[in-house]
Image (cartoon, rainbow, N blue to C red):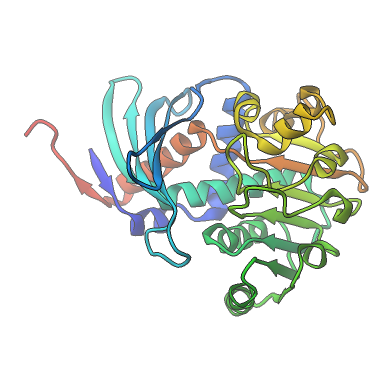
Length: 327
């Protein structure tokens, strides 16, 4: 078994190639060549944290495993981040462990790559302007991910802390060479954006349907439980609503569930899974005026596909540390 650290994950799994890994993972998910128990959370007594447990199987490549992620509230800039954990990867044929892989970077990369995949299949082909709402770890990840699938020539940033948002805008400008501007309000940040990525820890909406414009594509990334939402009901109602996995969405897509509960939409408002669009089972964007929306919750098939890609590259390059389980 290989133990693969964060630095090796970052090097072995660039976000661009990971988009293709996510394409195959979401295709397998929508074809149900997977086993995907709904993610469980276990509270940690006397601590402001919880353990997320995500087991699953993947048919091709044939593997199974589990992601364990400790989710703790930490100050902005804490090197540990909000997610610390690992992915245990097993070979399905032999039933043996292949790798234990650092989980926070793997999760961050596959999440932004899945958003890029959704953007590639749903956003207008001529989309060039990007709005990032939120200034945490996923903000910069999504900048690079969106640039992997579209020729982004202008970026806007919004964050609750205007000084941090300005600092992020400067960092993005320097790192990418793309003109980047921080705004004081979400409405200003998204006004001229073709692509919007919400990467916040918001408990209640910060992006409103009234601020959306025809032709935009939205990736909802930050909220992952049924009681929280990054956009309001109008935004849900106005959009063609796509998900990664229907069962996960009906369990944890707070924006959708809130709109259903209040009678604004029904569960039929989900157009489909992005894997179904890739598989030509369902249509994606129908015209340049539609607002498309991808609700990202993250599923174990994404983690397994990303983990297997990392393990395969590590095997090829002999990276990581080998542990002999028979000792």
